[in-house]
Amino acid sequence: MISFRNVSKSYNGQQAVHDISFEIRRGEFVFMTGASGAGKSTILKLLHHDIFPTSGVVQVSDHSSDKVKARHIPYIRRKIGFVHQDFRLIEDRTVFENVAIAMRVVGEHRKKIKSRTLEVIADVGLYGRAQDKVANLSGGEMQRVAIARALVNRPFILLADEPTGNLDPETAGETYNLLDRANLGGTAVLVATHDLEMVRLSGHRVLHLDGGTIRPRTIPRAGARPMRRTAT
Amino acid sequence: MTLSHIEHVVREFFYGTRRSLKSHLAPVIIMSVALFILGLFFVGTANMQEVIRLAHAKVGLTAYLAGGTTSEERSRLRETIQSMPGVLAVDYVSNDEALQRFQRQLGGRSYLLEGVQGNPLPAALEVEVYDDFKTADRMSALAAAIGGGNGVDSVIYGEDWIGQLERWIYFFVAVDLFLGLVLGLSTLLVVGNTMKLALESRKDTIQVLRLVGATRFQIRLPYLFEGAILGLLASGLAWLCLYQTWQFAVARLAGVLFLGTSGVLLFFLLGGALGATGSMISLHKYLKVSRA
Ligand SMILES: Nc1ncnc2c1ncn2[C@@H]1O[C@H](COP(=O)(O)OP(=O)(O)OP(=O)(O)O)[C@@H](O)[C@H]1O
Ligand SMILES: [Mg+2]
Image (cartoon, rainbow over all chains, first blue to last red; front, side, top):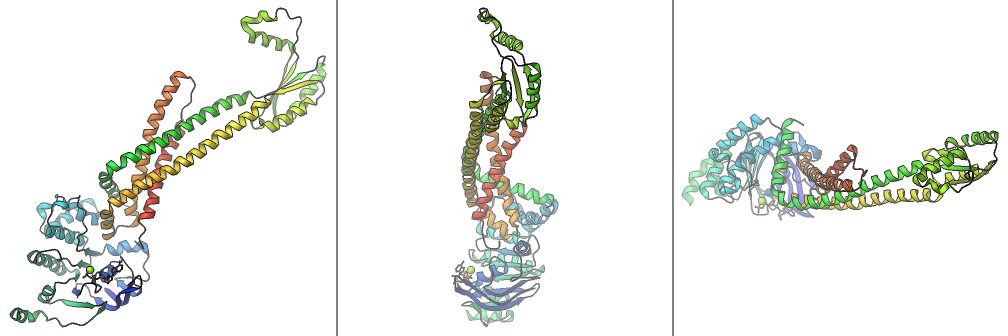
């Protein structure tokens, strides 16, 4: 469904990721870890077609990055939900409008927009806040609005770039619950994070980046959870 | 393009302008001043051209006949002139008619003629010329041709002011074009700058629209719309001022013309097009991001 084939990306001659190949299958939940500057955000942006590989091919369903036409890119993005660390919300609009905008762009029917938007807002636990201005929300609530917007069009994959970077541990846990629920609904999830503990606890597949390439790294699987607990 | 697509554009337009209402006030006023000045010159030119047209219509040629011309000579001459290129009609004015006309012109002062013996006025052929023939060159050539005819004493036509008229017409059209260009360009700059600020203040919205997969068209259309509306608003203001000015002028000077229906439409079209073009230019300049 999604594949990177020998993808390299340089910014002004400086290589950010180098010869990366991996696949994500339908409905999979994958973590991406690595030190700051390892290339996590770069990979997410490549996937979203915000940037393009210097060499190699990024394939998202039927579209490959080397052949895609500029006018098709928006339609690829409509099938990808993307949650940024800084949320990227329009603060002077309501929660409802921030979520609905993704459906308006697609040209959905007004009734459908209303019902689906309210449904997703309820799913992320913000039902009563639909008509509040985003500027009045807390960080964790904004995060949930961003997730709701990313999910409202039922994308086949949800990308999240350090979704819990700005949140306290409890709120971060709730955020992962939301991502898990989306995944249970059939959406693939790719999360870039520094939160190794969460990665270990989840037992999901991990892509570990080191200096722009994928390195194998031994992370205890789900069954090993108690071991880690006793170790600390 | 479905109804909800249009709804999206209109919605983004309203969300967007709500943020920049205050910063839009100045450009609309500047634009309407520019359009007002331009409109004044258009109306001025239209009036000037009307005056010139009326004057032009009167441009003709009079061939005074030598004394003692026989009616046979006269009709031959008449036929010759009639067959010359550019001649629409030839009228014979006998010396009696000429005298009567003169007396009518003098009106109450016809006593001035009391001491005059007989009729001193010559008979004449009045030559009407096609409008496109009323240029200085063609008229003087025609006058020369007629003047060479048998029995013609002298030929007069408005030699000076035909050339003058031509120069005025060129002058007015040139001034309009120049002014249109200068004001048009500065209006574009003003709108372009306004839209640049608008784009600047709505970066977040544009970023979000890109994120959720809006097409270039969906992102840009609200701004084109906004530019056009600013232009139309400015046209409206300018038109109101023009209209008031015209009312003021007409009260003092009967017969002053105003913009006709097509003129008004053109005026609004010009404003709208200027606004849309200005915003298109800044969209092009500030939203140029690779493949997005
Ligand atoms: N627009 C850019 N121009 C130049 N260099 C860039 C650009 N974006 C990223 N880089 C560089 O590419 C490398 C990878 O950056 P990237 O943002 O992908 O890292 P990251 O793994 O997301 O880091 P972090 O965990 O800090 O977010 C870094 O060295 C970064 O400086
Ligand atoms: Mg990053």
